[in-house]
Image (tube, rainbow, N blue to C red; front, side, top):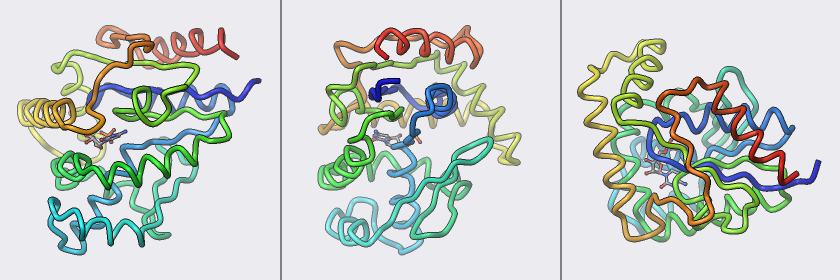
Length: 222
Ligand code: C5P
C-alpha cells in the first residue's frame, strides 16, 4: 500500500464523515474529520463565552486548545483538552455558529497547519470543505461529494432522530442552506470543487455504493 492522501470535500450533510471513515478503514489509513476541529473551537468559545467574531480572543483560546481523535463506533471519538465532546460538537448551537468561526483567517491558518501536520506522513483520508483546494493541494485523490439539499436534510433528520434531537425537516433544510451559503461565500478558502477533483453525486446512492466508488478511484493510485 502506498501512503497516499485522499481529500473528500463537499457541502454540509453530504455524508463525508461516514464515507471517509469507511474508506480509511478499507485502506488502513488514518481518518481526520477537519469539520470536527472547527466545531471543537466553536464549542470551547461557547463555553468560555467568547464572541464568535472576536478573532483575537479566539486565537488566544485556540493556542491553548488540544484537539484529539480516537477510533470509535459508529463515529470517531473527538476530544477537547482531553475531555470527550463527540456529541457536544453536534449540538445545534455549535452547528449554527461554526461557519462564523470558520470564516476567520487566522483561525483557518492555525487549523490548516495542524491538519497538514496530521496528513504529513500520508496514509490519510481527510474530509472537510477546503482539503483538495487548500489544505492538501497535492493529494493524490480528490473527491467532491454532493447531494440535493432535500436529500441532505432527510439524512440529517434521520441522524438527529436517532440521537433524540427533534428539529423539523424544513428547519434543517434552511440551516443546511444557510451554512452552505456562508461556507461557499467566505473570503478565505471557500467551499469549492478543486479543478482535479472527481464529483460524486450521492443523491440516489447508498453509503456502500459511495464507498465502493471512492475505493475504486483511489485503488488506481495506490
Ligand atoms: O463537516 P462539518 O459539517 O462538521 O463542518 C462544520 C463546519 O466547519 C462547516 O460548516 C464549515 O464552516 C467548517 N469547515 C471548514 N473547513 C473545513 C471543514 C469544516 O470551514 N475543512
